Image (cartoon, rainbow, N blue to C red; front, top):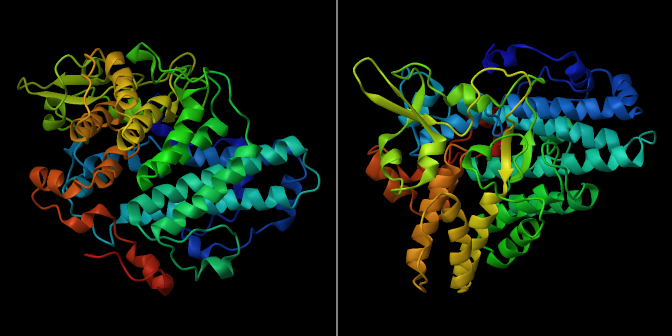
Length: 465
């Protein structure tokens, strides 16, 4: 049975979350107190019930929103929005709307992405508040759940601000505050994210064993801090945090490219647990083409053509399917399980150590430590079967090499390419050459029109929309 059916099933274990939190509201500005305050008090008097409430949050993250590999997640549409995937469905499908750049402030997918994410943040805040107000939970559980909550709240706000620009940073379940909350600029959102992550670090475990990294750890928090430093071009912090993870011998790149996305990959820093013990990550079911031509998306031909000759990632991570007219289509094949398996083989990898080598390499290059930067680039290249870069002090050559390595290494993973186009400030040049209808203001998505009507403090709308 395919993973796509999972969104229609609710685990009884996670029904506790719907009792805990009022999920009848579909906008974060409308969220009020839980319907059953007694239930909240009961939940946070018991360690197992409290952990079940947070488990419901993880289930939601895997099913929809920025961190979901499912068809309803942002991963697919952001790859179609940039220059990774081509849409083949009707013009009204989410992928086609983003691929064709026909999105508007009234587009359902934009509204859903916004409201789903803020609902997830509200649920996280409810857990944080419930834990903090409890005098019954064990200190171990209190610390773990608070640490996870602060980490997740920071990560979701980071995705929101990278995608929408100025946004509210929501830290409360108080509906009177939330229904009129204003926006913060991206630099202010980053500052709040850092505060949450720094709060999370001492509460989280240092590491988790290979195959069991289904909860955030200190290493996960350091990874997100390194990513933020990369976005902000704060190269000292990028070095500091990437070094903390790379120096831990438990987090090693897999030499075999076919093992990178397995649940027991040593390079995985944090991954989401599938629905059940026989299920695998959504990505295999979403991306693998069993028939051709595609009915939804496939990789763009120009993306395929841009791989360097001899790059083994092209062979290991890209599949192909030929139709009756002998036309070949290509698809992301990082995840290889289309169906269930006797036991889960693949978890959805959210953070992995390869990203940190790329971040650290850029930090070294920007700081003029070219030999160290080249060494990190070559670590990624050599694993892919490519020859080492020659020593050079030409920063432009090295940055272009990094751009190519990030494109080949991180494709179809949670919007990396879209955010990289902005980071390197070449979104307009690249996208106009590939999509003539691209406009500079497309570097941000519009705020949902319905939210602006409900809360005027979210105005003004992003430029161009």
